[in-house]
Length: 231
Image 1 (cartoon, rainbow, N blue to C red):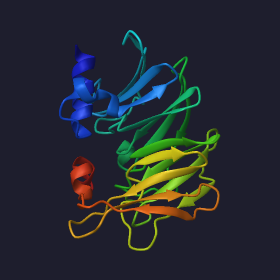
Image 2: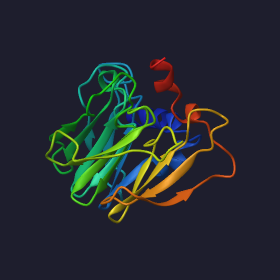
Image 3: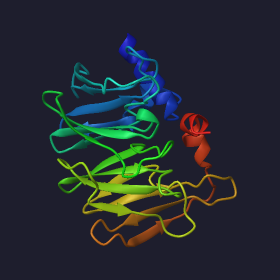
Image 4: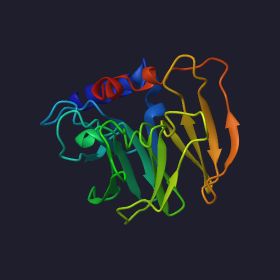
């Protein structure tokens, strides 16, 4: 019962009003199983966060992932499968954010990724995704207007940094892989800013396509707790 409540809290933080009916929107398929993040899960510390691996057919809990961090890390704010592994973002870890790679069979932590020149409130780990043999991690407040960093799965420094087109902000709020390329959102930080999403060539960093919504969606509606925490 506690796990279900924690997952419901995580879904609410992601804007899902009815977790039982819409829970799959925050899950990532892991072979025939499901990975779901619960950034408000308490454990030893308030809002430290957790991620859970469930068996797809039965719904049985197979593994629980945590980072043993301090309260308020929001571990599990973003989750993704990366081959046989599980990638979990914690955008408030140590105030700057981090992402964690786990073995999807054993739950063993394989690597921890942190942003270069990390600063308070970068929200590194707000979004995560695999790309080829690497992983990409969004930090929508880093570098001034946001950034996406590409890491080798065993590395501790990014091999490539993707920056937003001119005029875009909060770049890296959400990520999705499209073959060797990826889709990244840049919702902006003010009501008058028109948010956008971009398809980025993973090899060249060139923007392949740009999408604009009909109605702007303010960035603060998506990440109100981190923005409040960073002032």
